[in-house]
Image (cartoon, rainbow, N blue to C red; front, side):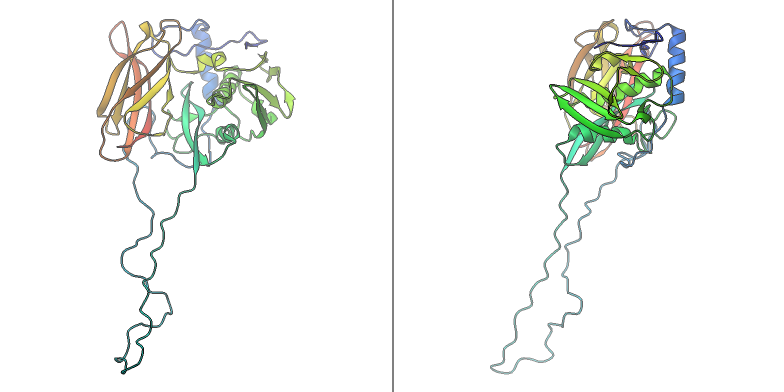
Length: 356
């Protein structure tokens, strides 16, 4: 599908680093600067109620704390005597022929609580001006698309939005989901009119991209149609963004980093070997991926070649074995090297929980 704007706006290429390959639909530098200013002004940290996924960390730098463990199960050591029960110790020996009474029954140990079943999914927020998938865990449900949109509308948690480089959402607070349906691979999402309030064209494109990426994480969804207060949307917001049919991920490629990590998600619990997959559009399709501990020690890394690069988007899917002795905060970092001086550029880094 094609998207456009009656004001002539198109997407802004946000390739980080001066040596990155430029997207064919790039604006001039002045348009890029304006778009970033608009995103920064209109997209704000959320105050979702999902609770922190990880200790508060500053994005792009190793965290100082590791998640604490605890079973939460009640102790089963020793014996338990019910309150108010008579003592079972006799005050005298039983007389000949007298019954000593029934033997004392051991008190049962309390059973450990059974964890309620859950469903894992992701919602897409922005790190800087780029989309990143963020881990969410909800009570088990078959209505995963509805649950994902609701998590998206709730916004980043306080821990995720902490710091100047934290996660933000361009979706206005108070936006609500009215209905959602999936037919023939197309999701139709109906949101309240608040969804198109405030912000300029960059903010409008970004919030549409957040919804499209969040819904198309599911194999059953290839595109998204928008409704506002029950009415089909053909022209979105006062910015005049024309939606000429179902929106797809390809329509919002300018909102992902030059090296886009779609798996693992921000805050996900991972195990070895760690699968890292996504898209890339970098010089000669070459880049690197690393896994590091909270202290910054690199424990795994490898070079990666995407299926296409230097002006085209290619896919990649690699695994990295690593070894840790206990669950702890770690970081997944992707980057390429400048062809001019070999310095790192197009860097994306965010936290995960490393499992042994």
